[in-house]
Image 1: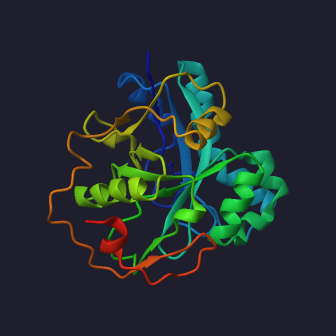
Image 2 (image 1 turned 120 degrees about the vertical axis):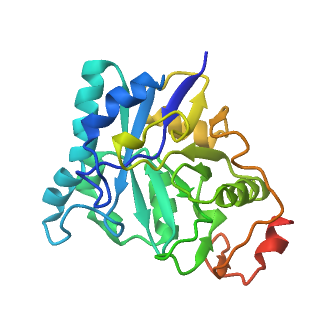
Length: 264
């Protein structure tokens, strides 16, 4: 038996771009046969809904409201809900899993991390980092940053990408970098949760805690991805219109050519 999980979801309580409250997602995902969902609202430097001038503990309490709202409704209806967040650096986004509200309250320095510090500290405290939609090209993104030494996995399929070629390139990037591949819907509205738009990952074992997902990432034991057919297939016409910055294990620019790095 396989267990299906949504890995990338935003609520209106935590994300400024979110449309639906946490509890509004529960019935939708149950109807599609999901075992659980991750709430990954936009973090401090990202498109967060919480005012940044608040005291840190107040900010954390407000930031976690979407997750807690979903968790309460999930417990009532029978859908597991897990906590994470999505942080942004220079247009590049990262999903963080494995740390919780209590950890955040004790670590205000998380809002000022560099990419390398994020990776090192999240791993030190038992979590993992996944780069979200690495090849997305949009008006607010001015450069693609690829730092394979600062992530545990790559989101190879993102339901929010407007062009499937972004996912095809992310799939190749994950494989060339020898990193696990994940998939997530990047959903912002419960009205968008449909069979063709809802992505996710299948696990062989039911998660008892977020630590189980961290272990699945670190051991590269993610099963099948739930994505649209052909979503990650190369078609030979992929284009990258933005500058690409490929970085080393210390998150320093290498100047490498993208197509040479990917081998395509």
